[in-house]
Figure 1 (tube, rainbow, N blue to C red):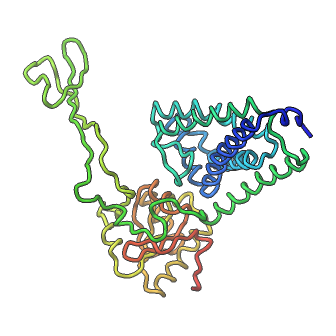
Figure 2 (cartoon, helix red, strand yellow):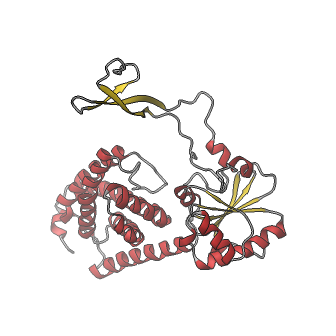
Figure 3 (cartoon, one colour):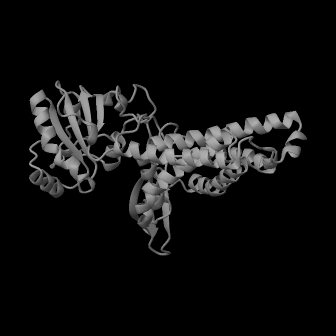
Length: 380
């Protein structure tokens, strides 16, 4: 037995501490990896945010999806290895390597705040950037304890069996994510999940706290060239050397924000049809194509069949996209589509359904069905 003498000489209290810490760290990694694996496109979008907003390297966005797959599979595998004590020293070093990367990264994200949340637990558990950093500080402390006690961790299974199980877990996680991409996440943690009423999720309760803004007036001193901000109660309106440059509204206190705050449906002349669609008496099929130029060709070819399906079942059918109107007309003409398209924010469309195209069924504003285009049955 490997390291048997060291393990046998380890006090019971220390063995229990190692066991508890190993399971806690493993559970965090397994949970983090699992919720990412359930929604790999969500992780892909988060990587894109990092590359474009945090690091100003948009050219790396092409690697977002494979990185999302690998990260989720590695995190989940590391967690399972720790929980079940498979190749424990490998697992400990893997978890330590994760923290070497993520601890300084989350500190930078917390300080600079280029994204609102790091996405470490996907949409299942959203915590702010400072909470994420402090969570990683605690995790690093626990992992360091395991690093210093790694020789006191062992498994009665052979090395080959432990390695085989670990590799199998990793490959299963990869295959599972591929299935989620081709269909829809088996768990939907977003506010547009089935059963939710969009209008209710957009509502602000009576008496809820509102955002508080402060007006800042920007003036430039014509003599010295100094540019300075003044409050609306204290600005140099009597001093002619100060020349007004700009007026800004600065958010100083965040108010209540509903779960859904960016859902709008606008036509080509800017008229908002959101309320009309959410209150429509008959069922509504929303065909979600966040970018028509990136839509699956088979999905676009299905549009005219969806149109016939809606006509047959007396449904209203509309398309929602963030593409420009020229692209919309091009697609409608190419695929013989007559139903109207409207514009909605790209991020909102990606949040509504993880498919392009995706299909959402509304009944008086309540989500009653969601499908990847591959899973929608036209014969029902």
